[in-house]
Amino acid sequence: MSASVIADLRSDTVTRPTPAMREAMAQAVVGDDVYGEDPTVNELQAEVARLTGHEAGLFMPSGSMTNQVGIAVHTRRGEEVVCAEGSHIYEWELGMMAAFSGVVPRFVPAPLGVPAPQDVRAAVRHSVHQSPTGLISLENTHNKAGGTVIPLEVLAQIRAVADDEGLPLHLDGARVFNAAAALGVPLSAITRHFHTVSVCLSKGLGAPVGSVLVGSATLMKEAHRYRKMLGGGMRQAGILAAAGLVALRDGPGWLADDHRRARTLAEALVGAGYDVNLAAVQTNIIYATIPDAAARSAAWAERGVLANALGPDSVRFVLHHQIGDDALDGAIRVLTA
Ligand SMILES: *Cc1c(COP(=O)(O)O)cnc(C)c1O
Image (cartoon, rainbow, N blue to C red; front, side, top):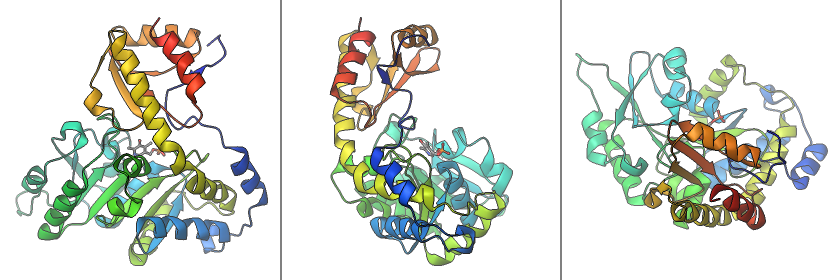
């Protein structure tokens, strides 16, 4: 990479902590969180629990860990996890549901990331001849489908399926704040439908590190044990939680602009002759069909615009709060030249 970077569109994880986050980190009051004695971690966990309408929260280093601990608290070995095709919990978590919890995924079709409630129901198994379903898991927004949002009425219907079948419902809410912003609803309107929710602080909200799992106090007690097994007990983690609290305060307000800029970029790409499914551009992610994706993205990187080629003819662009309107204009000039 030779040119200075105009816009890093590889992911919303590439942001640097804001001055307010650095300041809060420097000032954070800390304790030993494995003993539950870090006041800043406790404050963060309580705040995410409050925002999501759940009883308790547990801070962890990554969204993969909050998802996998969420899966572990709900399932037994040999069970299946019914989830939308392309789910991060399987596609990008390195087989951990099998390696750690001993469970396997059963994908259901999910056009634009939204599984049909009847398909979820049809995927549930209780027979002695088949591996039983232990959990239903959704992803909102759905990363691989393009940052797409699940309508609230579908969430309610899938929760009804879970209740009918006596199954728990987990949400991979790495970008659930983006979903809430896109729908214009409070976070809890989405998260109240689930038994556990994994929320990332280090995606669009801009914190340097961290995710929070929420659920009942009983489930979070169990989750605490699994977090320790995975090496996720972090001691004076209030240093990180302090940045997370600032992210919760400042981050949600950035997302509508990220979404507006994603739409602008998507339309510019279409204008330049690239194929983008605009119906899938609902939040801050764009997948474009671009021939020779790897070569094109390498050429753009030479000119200061970074984006990940995720297939032979597929490039993903992700907007975040550190790409403002000027950076976006600069990126569009490079990408459409
Ligand atoms: C980023 C992401 C995660 C968590 O990833 P980590 O890198 O482990 O924090 C989980 N689910 C989705 C949909 C994601 O995009």
